Image (cartoon, rainbow, N blue to C red; front, top):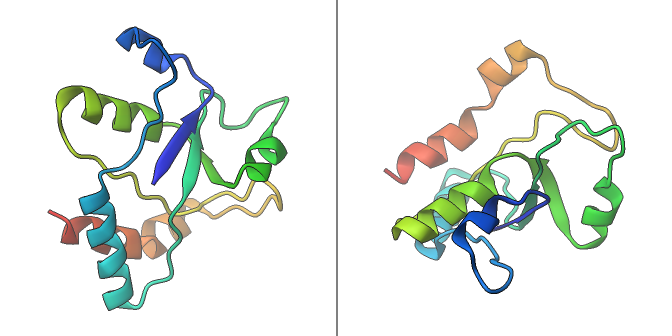
Length: 125
């Protein structure tokens, strides 16, 4: 639904404050409705788009305290580009690596089992 960031990407827009990148509500609402109709588990919330995914000085706990659900690398820029160009955007994620527990998925698991997100994404087109 929203994307925090630790990058300076928004500086290019020379805004007189801090821009809060968010998804298009219509796309988000349709994705949620489709998840529910398919019977898929889902979460809606805030992520952090980070320049460094595997940091030597992780700050994950601080983002978690603010209710951030996941770390990824592109959503904030996607939302900013869409806002600037007058387009709609929705970032959707399937978790592959758990930064707290250390649990990871194999390339084969990612290839063969991450299909629910694809179903929902394709249903929005």
